[in-house]
Image (cartoon, rainbow, N blue to C red; front, side, top):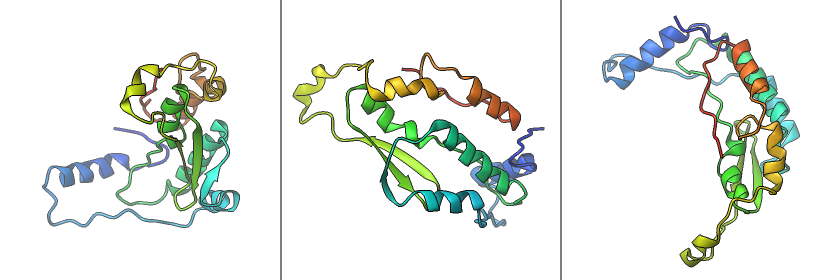
Length: 171
């Protein structure tokens, strides 16, 4: 039995989804319900669509905790998943010296990261180097996704909700 505080009936959901992915569910209808969310409404009040400042990792974890907590009683075929898009492309490009930009997506509560192109052409490839002094690296002390980071706050939150650990990126 799998136990996830955000999805009490997760075993049944996973069984239904497995039947779908194994093409044994041609006679079933699957549904993911969108319900009003106070956490998302607060996010939409705080962020307009477009560029935004560096997001506080603790605030982002709290957002996902509130959002999934609101949805815990919804009996649909969704499984709660939070992709920390704040630390995707921007993290890697930033650590190579790129100009990191963050963008808010009020429709779903995401904040994505990106960098402007690092190279004008491939002849500059050999000039790329890991920038240990980059602003994002110094802020990484608060982000449980990079080497030399205290993983405890992130893993503690996972444990509080009986969630299995995920992939931790190491640079």
